[in-house]
Image (cartoon, rainbow, N blue to C red; front, side):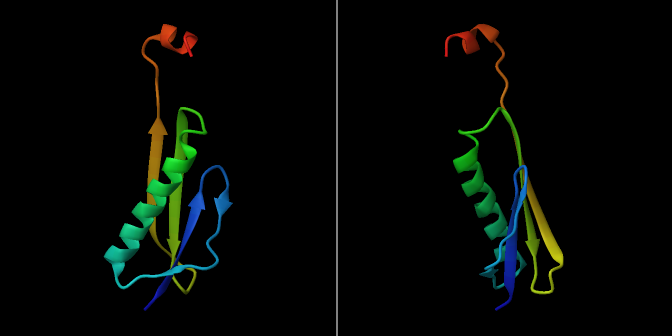
Length: 85
């Protein structure tokens, strides 16, 4: 089974040196989606209201074969709400 590497970019690049075996392109896509969800779940609560997450998927030849991104933007509509925190 082919091995793919899921590099994460959130302010700085973190390269995947181990990789994961994926049976087909849909499995690669699903793994990228799961990676984004895990990263967002961990980092959004700790970060600010404007964050971007990117997963770059490389194949065994080191070619980028898939890119997945997620942007988070939180905005208070009532400024007095932020004063009560």
